[in-house]
Length: 294
Image 1 (cartoon, rainbow, N blue to C red):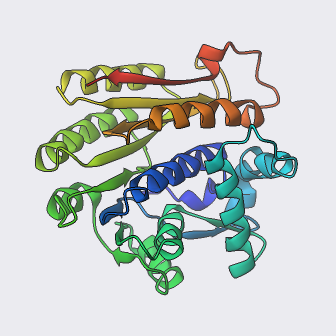
Image 2 (tube, rainbow, N blue to C red; image 1 turned 45 degrees about the horizontal axis):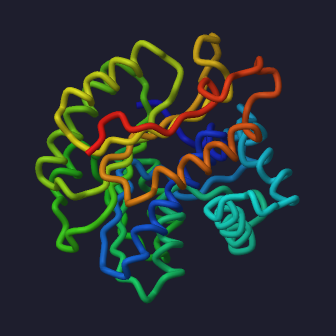
Image 3 (cartoon, rainbow, N blue to C red; image 1 turned 60 degrees about the horizontal axis):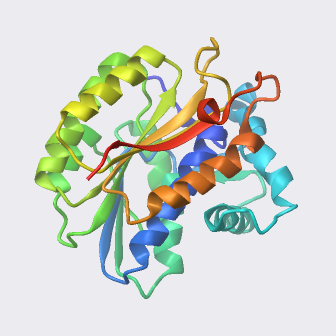
């Protein structure tokens, strides 16, 4: 597997994914009861936006750097999860250095640290040896367990957790989309059978309409209830570019999460959309809809 997230850290997809992750963690914490969180594709945990890898693509310029420019002029219309994301990012910069961008394990660990009154058990899997070694070094002081483990073997092995409540974040590299989507459908079906009340959040790229549409059809046919789609486009879906947008399928989202997610993507889309993108309708730009309801 050649994929390294260091080339893409802080891009528009990371921004959307991490803000939605914060919203999920916030709502899980509200009940004050113990819960479990697993990041199944953890990566390195921390990234440098001035690294050779990051500067080779400059994707952060079209993601977190665009949001940072707008973030200085915060308004009452800014969703709470976006404000929290920006505040926590500043905390990460003060803790490490001004060029750092945290991956999902850091956002999860920070939720654990900042809410000691809630019993949150957090774990992270990383299958690639080099990425795992860096992850283990960079987050070893944080309250998150790190394991050199493959998501397809590891997720079914650790669920259902003793806490009964929780979230599995699945953020794969998608190197072979049709095959990857098909395998992920099987993983979600198997995992949901073992833990039907668990929250499963699967990130996916919007760049191959046929693959994404087929994925949606397959997920509909699984019989799994409460499947929510959250999608944001920086380019229209029919434009041939590297990646048109970012999506997340969430099974069993918390109550009213769909309302929060709609506010989040509606706020972020005009900020993150590509400067050279043609005009898009609201439906083309973003959507939060139930793929399968109750």
